[in-house]
Image (cartoon, rainbow, N blue to C red; front, side, top):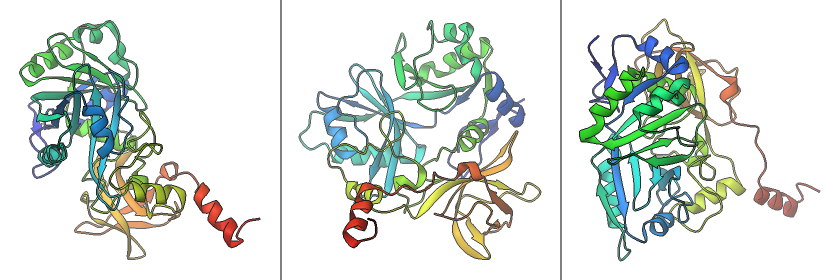
Length: 361
C-alpha cells in the first residue's frame, strides 16, 4: 500500500501516517518489530569542552557529569517554571546530540546560541534523521545484524555506528530503540531493517504506543502553563527530565516550591473516549457537568484500547467523574483509573510548615 501522509496541519506534517493498515502496524509494534521514520524531528549538536557544564546550568537535568553513551530527557523552563522545551539528549565522545519536536528546532537553536556567551560551546543544527524502532523482536540477531551490532545497547545508553550516527535504547518501559543516522544514509538503513523482517509503520503506530504508555508530548499534551510536575517529567537521569538535586537554573524556584510545599494544579491522565462519534481535537476543553476541568491532548485510535487520549485535568478529580469533550465534537470520556497519579505525599517542607502552625504533633 502507498504511504498515507500525516495530517497537515499537525505536529507530524511531512511524515508518513500509515502504510494502509494502521491497526496492523500497531499489532506488529506490540508483538514483533516495526520501524517508524521520524526524520522530521529537529536535531542539534553541541561541541566544545564546556558543553556539559554549560547545558547543566541552563536546563533541568543533571548533565554536567554524564558519561559517554548516556541517554536522558531534559527541559528548558521559563522564569515561572513553565515548560518551554523538551528534548532527548545523547552524550557521545566529542559531542552532545539533542532532538526535539520539529516546530521547536529553530526556537531551541536560537535560545541555546543566545545563552553561550563566553563558554567553549558551539550549537549547530545537525543533518541527522531519527528512525524509531518498537517491538519485542528488536533484540533478534537479524535486527542487530542490520544495525552492525552484536546486541542492543542497555536501556538509557547509546553506541556509535560505523560511518556516523548512533543507536540508543530509551530508558522507558518496553523495548524502544532509536537509530540516528546522517540523512543521506537513512533510507538505506531503513531498507536494511525491513530486509531483516522489521515492518515499516507510520507515526500513527508510534503515537498509539506513546499515548498508551502515558508519555506526554510537548505542545500537544502540554500548553503554555504546563509545569513539569503535572506531566510526570520529574526525576533523575533515566526516570524523568528534571533532577531535584542540582544547582540553579531558570524556573528552579517553582520546581522546588511545588515539590516541597504544594501540589501541581493539574494531572496528566489517560482517557477512554466514545469511538462512535467523530474524534475531538487536541486543545479541546474537557468538561464535567458542563464546566471546564481540563484540556485534551493527543487523541488516537488504539488497536486494543479503542479511542484513547491524554488530558491535563484538574488535580484530584475522581476517576469516576462523568466527562465530555467540548469544542466542535462532544464525546463522552472516562478516566483510566490506573493512570491517576499516586496518592499525594506531603513534602518535607509542608510537614515543617504544618508543625510550625500546630497542624501536626
